[in-house]
Length: 596
Ligand code: HEM
Ligand SMILES: *[C@@H]1O[C@H](CO)[C@@H](O)[C@H](O)[C@H]1NC(C)=O
Ligand SMILES: *[C@@H]1O[C@H](CO)[C@@H](O)[C@H](O)[C@H]1NC(C)=O
Ligand SMILES: CC(=O)N[C@H]1CO[C@H](CO)[C@@H](O)[C@@H]1O
Image (cartoon, rainbow, N blue to C red; front, side, top):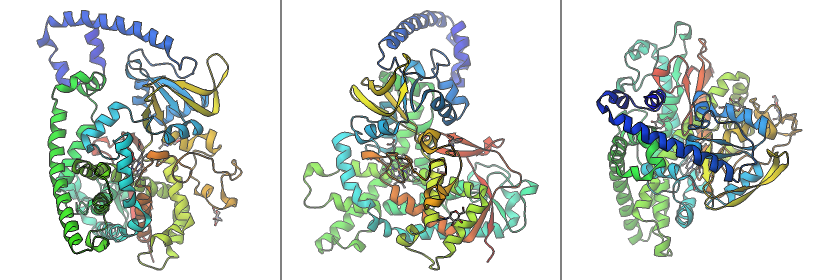
């Protein structure tokens, strides 16, 4: 039973499989024989693949074992930490193995990345990634490839113009102010600390300040321990709902919104990695077997679609009504949300039928906005406030800059004219990129140019890399953001001044900001090239408004009990308190009204 014992040690094996061994009985022995044969074949192919790999000459860390490659290492420590070690050892480009010996190319080389990102249709997302996304969002702009993507991007781009983003400003302010009111009343109302002890995950604690009560030393008069992450998440969900498709989740008040519940269920189920999921990813034939996961996803996605279709129908009616009156161009008539702009663009009379999106494609954009625009923004804001709590001087300097603005609701242009606000956001998004990495796959054999050649196994320098069709490429957004090879010796340090006037830039670099092929601020945070983040100006505007409102009202301090925060990386990288894992993802800070 050696193999079974081995399987038993696998972290991924669900309990119900373990419990069913005795029942399976002698069939196991037959199975063992088959498995042994498979392993022999596998080992043979393993050495064969190794032998013919065009990446043969590229160096990289040794596998942890022949079945799982480097996966155990990535499970046991933050991948960024391993990446960093290996960059020091092998340079910006190397390879390692993942599950079942699949080779992955690690590419942090700016020139190489530039090449991949500007030829994005030749380097699509790997099939497992796009299948998982397809299941959740449908064929929206995050998933579509080639001409379909081009068509969608073209129709969506006008939704994100600065003019249209300005039209969403009231939503940003309304929700930021609503959040501010919530926090103010939590701080005033100190008595409810004991109410949220019972069950941290139940809906009854939905409006609680934090999932775990404050320790005695964290109870300081006039302040409150607040889990900023969940609260910011409610605000960003409300914002993407209203600004995205004129739908009020009202998450700041209401835990029971049906669309939010359906989507959350779909998302958490979709992100689970279980044996059937892994098998289905590797052997597509297994996809015909229905799993609990696909059932849950299907049910939630039906619900999501039903609500989305209704939104689209209503919107179309409004537009058609306005159109017969000859008012189509008047934007008051159709609403200022992303979906309205899209539907309007899609109904324009000068489009050929093949240039239009189908109703299903329009629908897919709604779920795409929910997926791409909620957690990313809330995570970004969470890390920004956390970093400011760790750097009180920087927080003070930023607050002083914001206080120079006397208007209650300054415009986008006014907010964009504040250099320190911009520098702080850039610096935190550099160090804490909400999406820490992404994957691509070569659609055909390709040659990738390298800006910083790396030494091959044969001792010669490699300045361009031949890769085979199907090679998977890891784009380590965060490691590029924080590589000392790229940013200089203070790459790990929070130093917003590196983005400011010449006196204040990173000394080691002599004030030089490196040339990274990102769409924004020389950072890869929003990626770059033809498939950059379409929402990046939206996100920055939203973040600036929220910070403006919140920092003028509150001071953010680390808790005196000084809990250790760790980073959990799935699709986005989010915080958790060590020792309070049961409470889920959270980031508690001490929030204190600004004394005036
Ligand atoms: C700080 C917040 C955000 C960050 C860090 C971020 C980051 C990213 C990244 C890294 C990608 C590339 C993903 C990949 O191709 O592998 C991306 C794509 C995308 N983002 Fe964002 N995003 C943010 C906010 C938003 C918001 C608010 C929206 C919508 C309103 C949005 C919509 C999208 C869409 C639709 C794509 C797919 C674009 C395409 O493939 O053509 N994002 N984002
Ligand atoms: C939105 O983001 C927040 C915070 O990250 C998360 O708790 C919430 O479940 C998300 N909601 C949806 C519907 O995606
Ligand atoms: C440079 O940094 C210092 C303190 O870090 C600050 O007082 C000063 O205003 C900054 N200069 C510029 C040009 O932003
Ligand atoms: C969030 C995160 O993983 N940050 C890392 C950024 O990179 C530096 C150095 O490369 C690490 O020290 C941080 O932990």
